[in-house]
Length: 248
Length: 297
Image (cartoon, rainbow over all chains, first blue to last red; front, side, top):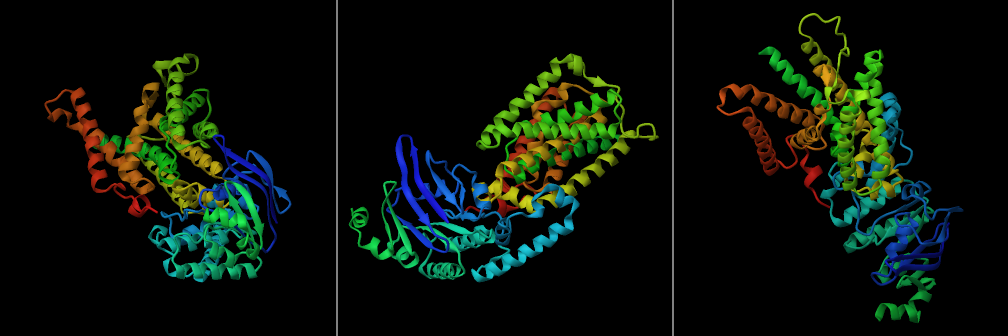
């Protein structure tokens, strides 16, 4: 579903990413691990269009997406979350959710003034869907609170729920468990497993080996911008270069 | 006395429309436009010049709005993809360039001598106090602008603007074309400034480049910040407070033993003081929402 080939990116002469090959199959959950500062997030930024690669090709669902605007990539169904969770704190929880659906009639000025009934009908549908998702993620009781009032873990949940509102074909999650307490971590893992069973494809960045081993069916290990190992969790766990990278 | 109050309210209402345009850009989208007055000037001059060429007022006003909106859009193309400060610099530069253009291209604008002799809405039909009629008309226009803007900011369109105001990476990651929305906001805000410009011309009956000094932009900023950024009612309130105060102090001139330049300087000092006091005790502005300004992630 997603394949990344020969991506290179340097910042001021320092190579941040040099990913020769990375592939995610439909319905799979692929983990990207590596110590802090090895270019995992830069790789994510490049895939999701927030950074431009110097070289290389990214194909999503048969379409070349390298160099496309982030919004175009999201519209193709590749939706990301952020390492520092970006809940919009000055909007309410439900407004955060309602932002996400694609092709909203009311996002056009003339429709707001001239076709208010159609806009309202679509808003009602989206609000209903938002309620359902918020209920699943245990945030329904907070729906009219400003998102700034949520805890760190709840903001993560909101961000994932919001990404799902956009009806993605594939989710890119950047450290979805960082700063989240163990109870919520278990919850997020549970939702991810359920989503995977429903056919969602994931690419997840994580530096906690334990969680990623549990979650993924294929793992890429990054060190200093390069993929130094890949394989199923078992293989990666016993790979010497990985142990070197992690334990120094 | 009553005529005086009508004049004060008329000016305040025109500037309230003008400030609503800025509030859309800054209050809801987070765009820093320091050249808002340019779009007022475009609206005023376009309406007047077309009318002097024989174009009826309604199409002339619409053309003024359209041209102001178009200029806003063109200005946005090179700047809106950059950081916010670039828009601030470019717009303030544009406003001054435009003012000097109006001042120097005498063949078109008669330069510092300005333009007059254009018609005003329903001028022939109104007997009695024309300014009173114009005030009613401006208040209707203000109400329509307010209602249309409220409808917009409560719509999905407004939600995207607010998300851009807070963190444009989020709408981008959800498939919204951030640049396009910013540009729409700038265009609409500029068109509203153009509309205010047309009505300023109707009120003044005579326009020249001195009506469009950079300070006018900052009066709108004061109105927006005073009333509460991101709150249309607050913006209108702010504009009415500011301009009543300006005109009120002009009225008090006879009773204070100071020269008019001294009073002029004092007036600005008082506005500054008022802003400081409001910012100390109510940083979100008179009607602003605290949660939308002070809650941090």
